[in-house]
Length: 305
Ligand code: SF4
Image (cartoon, rainbow, N blue to C red; front, side):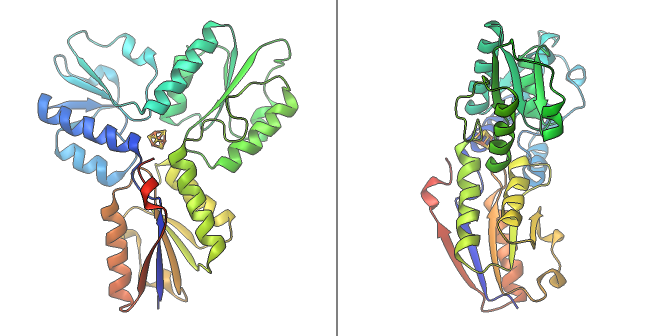
C-alpha cells in the first residue's frame, strides 16, 4: 500500500519542448499538412496528438510531398538533409535555441580548422545533426572509454568538445575527464557539464535531492523510452540509491504487483512529457491506495527552464 507520493519539481516540459510543440500546432493550423522525419519531441503521447492534428511522420526527406510544409524537430537536423529538398517545400524550424547555438559553435570551430569530439549517442537525432553540421569530417562521437581509446592521435590538432544536451551530467563529466587524459589540450566551454542543458541538469538535481533526503522505495519517471533526458532521470535515480526506478509512458505500463511492498514513491517527468501523464499515474496510485498523501517538492518556478 503506497502511503506517500513525492511529486518532484522541476519536472516535465522545458522551454525548448514547449516552443517546438507550439510551432508544430501553429504550423498544422496554418498549413494543414506538415511533415517531419523525426518526432517533434520524443514523447509518444505528444507524437500521437500532433499526428491527429496534421503532423505526419515520413521515413525520409524525399517522402515529403511538393508544395507542403516540413518541420525540423526540437533536436535539430543535419543541414545536408535539407540540401536536396524540393524548392516548393516550406521549411519550419523547431530546433531548440540551445541546440541551434551548439550547431553554430561547431560550424565556427570547423571553419577554423578544429577537430570536433562529441560526447553522446551516435544514433540520437541531436548528435546526427551535429555530425552533419561538421560536414561528417574530422568529427568523432564517443560514449564510452573504449570509444575514447579508439580515437586517432589528435596531439597535433586543435580539438573542441561538445556534448548531447540531455545526458546524465556525471557520465558526461567522467567521459570528458578521460578525454582530457588522452588529449590534454582539448577545449570545452564548460569542463564540468559540457553542454548538458539547464533543464536536464535541474531535473536530475531535483531527483538526486529527493532520493537523498527521503526514504524512497520507488521512482517513476513519466515519459517515453525514446527520450534521452527521461532515461537519464531514471538512471540518475538508480545510481543514487533507488534501484526500483522506471520510465513509464502511461498507466498501461503500470500493474498493482509493481507496488508490492512499496510505501513511498517519487514521481518525476522527462522534459518532453506532458503533466497529464503524471496526473494519470497519481490517479492510478490513489485508486490503488486511497488515503495516499501527495506532496509537491522542489522548486516549481524553474520548471520551464
Ligand atoms: S532538453 Fe534542453 S536542449 Fe533539449 S529541448 Fe529542452 S531545453 Fe532544449
